Length: 304
Ligand code: HEC
Ligand code: HEC
Image (tube, rainbow, N blue to C red; front, side, top):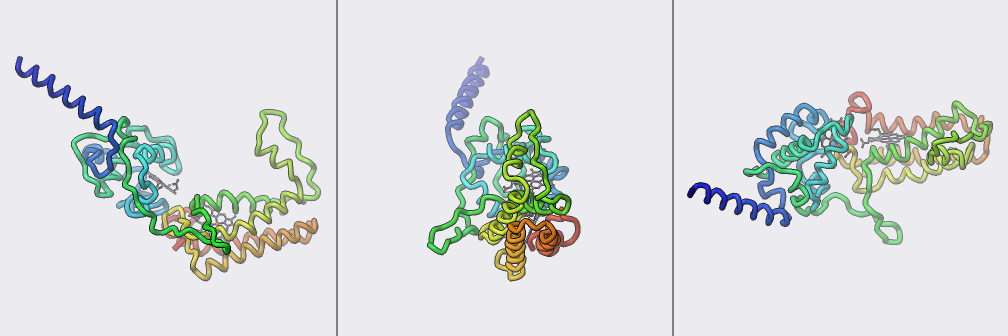
């Protein structure tokens, strides 16, 4: 009889502590995961993440998952965000393949590797939102100043994202001129259904207008490769202060401007040299800063 009563009391007390805890915001340093859980995460990590993030999470082609920069990225954010990031976008090449529980276990292992202590209880879905990273000051990104002294916003994307967003699609529009004379292009007919904004948009400024725009985009966006505080995908800072880096950027600006001039002339024969010049401007920088040591994907040596 006595045992049953004390057991009930214990359960009640535990329930009370739980409900109090649920409302409290805790820090990741307050023993929020268990060692056994981190071990499960470690197995997953070894099998699926080491290749890109490194044995000690020091970063290879992917960014580091420990240390100052990592903590600054997640400053003051709840663990829910990190679990979401992993579950929805990792592993980079097969996102969506991890279960919620696996993603939480991986976060436990990330915390353990970052030297945050383990505790008696597993990290669970219910507590993720209440556990936050400590607030960290960013040490690297100093906002850029314009000539009038207004500060520019800090970069939003890493270098690879910026390349895919601007350089890649606009260079492709220009490379297409090798295959098709923009002046001779018949007006594109829109597929009847379903409506597609991207397809429709490509018909609004057809032919040479599209070439003008791509040239302007390349020339005007090249200086974004010099924005201070931007990181490469592997977590290294973009080498914006190197003399050769600045030259490669300047070369891209020059090709963009020349492309704009020639495009304005609507002279297909004169424009044909642009593709090769543009290809060189991209490739010269990639040879040194992107593709060193092998294929395009050899991410660890990028931006060195
Ligand atoms: C093929 C390479 C690759 C693999 C494998 C991979 N990642 Fe990544 N990971 C990246 C790249 C590249 C980024 C940076 C781009 C991004 O944030 O989406 C990244 C970003 C991250 C981030 C965000 C880091 C930050 O500070 O914002 C986390 C967390 C992460 N990965 C966890 C994992 C985990 C856990 C696994 C294993 C399940 C994994 N990754 C597997 C390449 C990879
Ligand atoms: C000043 C140097 C420089 C110039 C000029 C440059 N790039 Fe890049 N590019 C890089 C670096 C460095 C990376 C790797 C970025 C990273 O890993 O975060 C990269 C990455 C890329 C990627 C992403 C590859 C991936 O990982 O998915 C594409 C696409 C790309 N560049 C296209 C272009 C095109 C097209 C041009 C020319 C119009 C160009 N780049 C000009 C330095 C440059």
